[in-house]
Image (cartoon, rainbow, N blue to C red):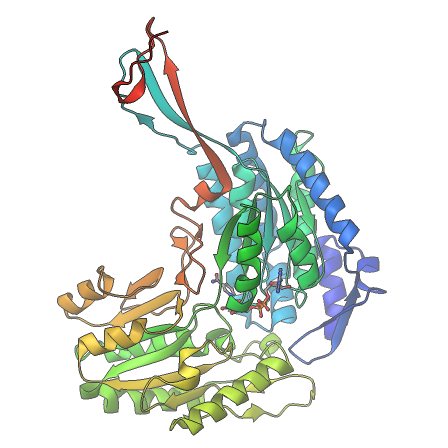
Length: 503
Ligand code: NAD
């Protein structure tokens, strides 16, 4: 069966009508073969305004539904995702080129965040705070915020939406989602799956709780600029964040920015090298290097360099690259030609800066429009040129170090600050890496790789990664507004700070 036909069948099973898949002006291609699999319609500027108005009207009703009842909708969403995990996971593989376990793993993440959010719906706690005035009580209350705008990247086409939507919905917000223009089909599938949950939920789910805007950067900009959207959670490149951040700040809207990473690992003399090898291989080559948490820089102590780097090169040479739908390859395709061109440019720049490159060549297939590459490992004399930037492709830059403090300084000497790892059995090194003078990233790990975060923790990074946090821990607070309430149950009016104002 052709990929286009299979796509149509999967979408039909998920509840997306065939008419949505043809006649539009956005051409959707599968990176697996490069072939066209659909043509979908895109929104106009006026559509964006209408969708936001509808979502705002839904918010005004939804905010009054008790939070545990809102959790019930997310519970049903989780059930629908469980029931359609195979189809949605397969669609992720078709639209993004992920291997089956990664496509399914992405849907599992959606299910996990739904479970998390259901529990959260009974735990949107505020504090009761000791007050300095007698006969008074002070507390804080968390209220729904409004329409939450979600802008997502191609590489996690469905999980990022669910991280935001599951929390926003239990927090009493409605959601307007602008997915990547490279992955509109999985977004339409999520919209249909959500509609099933809403149908089962009943009448107190207002029409317009979720609106999906298919389109490019201009649709994203319209969402960012709309006065009725108090929060935009934007996931994508640092370049996108530089455009979106100031626009949101300009109208005092909140931003959750989840931007690029340039993640590093340090392999110390005492590291368990077998364990480190597996973590590095998955972190650097998994998802063809197209994860925000992909391992891109590796600092290896000179005493173990010759023990681990040759083994790593062997792993690179032997890893299977190929069609992810056939189920055997560990590394699928790059998303498109421009990703391939960027990878080749980075490798040329690395060579010019003295790097020695293993791998990186295109893997020829029968499909001229598909871009498969051998993952590249580049031994660099120092951290210069392309090493300082994120190239969204499977390139791992490896550098030797002699002094731990120097490795730590190099580790932190890039713009991005998303994920990081240290491989060591030395307690002092591990603790220093996690300390205030250690890794400056939002995620810092010991003896596990940089990629593959669990939903229970807050996810996000510092510096040019944007500073946003989503998913677990107390990330929900960004989706609500906090009111501090003071109640005077005395017969006097004591003023704060001992002020006296007798009239
Ligand atoms: P991208 O920046 O090209 O696009 C991301 C999204 O932003 C798309 O929906 C796009 O249409 C939209 N967009 C682009 N310009 C915009 C603008 N000016 N205004 C409003 N919206 C705009 O990113 P991509 O190529 O889809 O994804 C890869 C990038 O995303 C990498 O840099 C990766 O590290 C990053 N990423 C980060 C995280 C994270 O959680 N930190 C997660 C996934 C991906």
